[in-house]
Image (cartoon, rainbow, N blue to C red; front, side, top):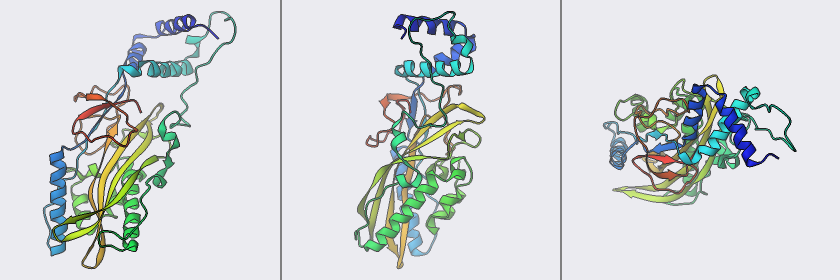
Amino acid sequence: MPHGDDLDQRFNDLVSQMDADEQRRMRSSAKKGAKSARSASNEDKERLREAGRLRRDAGRAGWDATPPPPRRRRAGRAWLAGAAITVTLAAAAVVVTMRPDLFAPSGPLPGDTFELAPVDVTRPFAGSPADKYADGAAGFTLPEAEAIGGLTKKDVATGLDRARELLAAAYLDKKTVLGGKPEAFAKLLHRDQRGWFRENLTDKKYATRYMVHSFAPGSVELTTDVIKVNGRATLGTFKEKELRGASVKLNYLVVYAVHQPGRPLTMMRVVAHVTGEIQLFRQEGRLVTWVEDLGAATAPARCDTDDGFVHPYFDDSAPDAVKATGKPKDPYALDQPESDECTTTDPT
């Protein structure tokens, strides 16, 4: 095998033969990381919960209420200098794949030679924790049903099934994920939430689009139809005034493999950390599954957009107007506190 000095020389020779644009792209890649931010402040989320309770209680009384603002969580991106070696080598592998003449030795090398593997878009989750995650809705694991909060075990089991269907519609439905109308999710909402959700999808201040995962239309193609999911939910109780029932607290990671349209070698993984709460209770003799809170922090994606869509951040994306803050976080960590800021994360 060649010695370290030989490798360094060959890599320097490779870079020296690239034009200025190629070198700038590689230097940009060497700084790449991920940035993630919640799309709503704690105050916004509390306004949503309070307004949601008003609408739910109003429905019980038989009249309508002002639509509540949804929980807005802005996605984000940032690049880390610590990822320089890994990303630079990955960039070099792509260059070698596309232009092997640049790395061809001028003469025979002593001993064994080596090859840099090209990007394998057929295994987009390889080398990441997501490779071991479940495929699709199977990853939305839920607790076993039990009689709780004044509900029977059968009621809770029915509500948990609906909760999984809501999660799958919000984060796995292909039309929704690619920026289309999220009708799969809307149809599953309680009637007192359904109209409000549809009417406020494009609200300039509180777009309900934030409740589902939708890439900005035309921004990406799915590298694979497989979406990886991992996480858990906990079952508890809630009581608000005269209303009581079961509370399902959500904590999941949903991982997408995407690339720029028509450019499969730009493939990257986008991780959405989904948290929220779904409440189960009986109203006028009927079982209700109520989305009390639902949203996600996503990386790598832009922080300077506010339209409810996820705008993924690629190597050649325009600079983000919002600066990432804080120490880098692990995008695959389920247990970390929420932040109102656009924060840095490790590469996905």
